[in-house]
Image: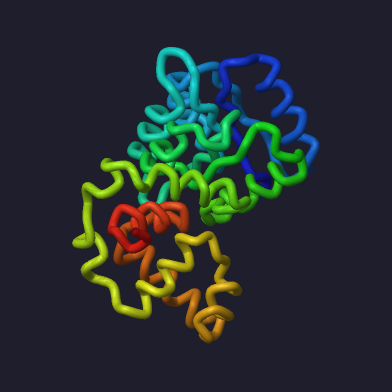
Amino acid sequence: MSIRVLVADDQALVRAGFRVLVESDPELVVVGEAANGAQAVELSRSERPDVVLMDIQMPEVDGIEATGRILAEGPNPPATRVLVLTTFDLDEYVFAALRAGASGFLLKDTPPADLLTAIRVIAAGEGLLSPGVTRRLIEEFAQRPVAAVRAPALLGGITDREREVLREVARGMSNAEIAARLHLSLSTTKTHVSRLLLKLDARDRAQLVIAAYEGGLMS
């Protein structure tokens, strides 16, 4: 079954380039193109894509607002997931997009093969926390006052072991890496991550990262 992709970018040439790239993979199909956030929301309603490739700076409705609207309208967990594409690796809007519910982000100069892999990762329900630029951005903007609003009470319902696992997730570690670092089995690690997703009402690993920083775990 094909992964359905919606491309949202205000530049026609960029949209065309992404369409050609995405459709070069037989398992992916582009179901629509949006020139602004409002169109992205409308097309998401009608086409129900698995993944939206979302630019941030677009006219009328920007990518952050569009991301929030798309995810607010769907089920929980959402059937449609958003992968933000940005020009700058420390774009202050990206952190806001992750807080709005985006499952991750990539730079627009990401190698084509990596973008195709990212689409599959996002479609499978995982947050895209690699490469290291993601961690740098989260660390940068999590230090701002807005990130501390929810305070440690956010993490009040998790166990000490879950805190350890959450800290490693926030550092961008995979399940296998967490298992090795904490001397756990892979299945146990997966169980802890699943419980964290449930307890923190998080859509995916990207949302766990936000919770870790907003809860003061990484300060």
